[in-house]
Length: 395
Image 1: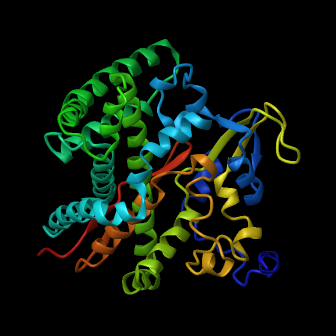
Image 2 (image 1 turned 90 degrees about the vertical axis):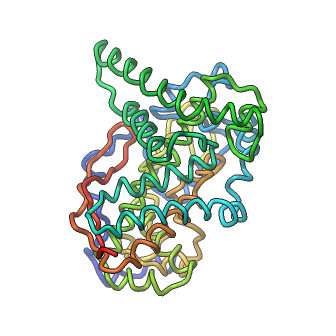
C-alpha cells in the first residue's frame, strides 16, 4: 500500500516547508570514505544490525579499552544493553507523566512569569532552561545553587567542547577551557549531587553511578553525554517547532485546539522535516549480504531517509501532520535514530516540546519579535537557531 501511495504524483510540486534544508545541503559532510545511505529501509537495516558498531567523529575519538570510563552512549553490544537497561525506567511513559511533567510545568511557570513581564526574551535561552531542568532531574543534578546557574555552567562546558581549533595552540586553549569549565561544573553541580546520593539514593543516573562505584571521570563523561544528548538537541527542536507554528497560523490553531495526540503528530512531522541530528555513522564488523561489507563505514542520512517517498508517500517536503497516520508509520521516522542506539529520551524531548509550546502559545499577544538565524555546527553536523526573540502582552 505504501508503494502505491508513493507513486501518486504530488499535487504541490515544488513546495518545500523545510527551513534547514538549504544550510544542511551546503554543509553536510559525511565521514571521508563512508557510503551514504539515503533509503529509509536500508538505513533502518543498518542501524538495527547486530553486525555494526558506532563510527563517526565522537565514536572514533572515544577510547573504549576501559568501558567503565566510557559513557554508555558510546558502547555497543551487551555492555551497552546492560548500562542502558539500568536507567530505562527513567524514560517510561508512566515516569514521564507522573514525574517529569511536574518538572516541565514548574519550569514553564517560571518562564511564563518572565514572559508576562512583557519584555522580548531569547527563545533559545528559554528552551534551554526547559531542557536543562528536565535533564537535571533525570541525571540527578538537583543540588546546585540554582537551575539558572546550572544551565550556564552546562552551556559553557558544551560550548567549549564544540569550539576546538586545529593545531597545538588550538588544543592547548581547548584543554585549558575544558579543564576550567568542567572543574567548575563538577565542583558546583556534580559533587553536591553525588554527596547527597551517597547519603540518600534516588531514582536517577547519579544514584546508579554511585551504587556502581563509577570513577569521577566516568561520572563526568556520563553527565556531559546526557547534557549533549538531552539539552542541546531539545533546545534546537523547541525553537524550530515554534518557528513553524509562528509562521503557520492554521497549524498553530490546530495545535492549540487539538488533543495531545494531534499535538504530538504535528511535532513529529516537523521533526521529520527538520531533524536536529543529520546523520549517523556505523562501521561493519561483519559482512551482511545486500547491506554492507566487512569494515565498511556507512553514513545513514537521516534527512534523506525522512523524505524517502517509499515511506512518506507523495509530497515528502510538505509539513503534513496526518502523514504518519495515513502511511501507518509510528513516530517521527528516523529523527531519533533506530536500533539499539535509538535515543532513549525521545519521548521525554517530545513531551518537553509539546508542553513548552502549548503553554507559550496560549499567552495573550504572543509573537515572534525577531526570527532566528540558522547557523551550522560542523562539529555535530547539525543546525543551531539563535537570535529569536519572543514577547507577549504584559500581565
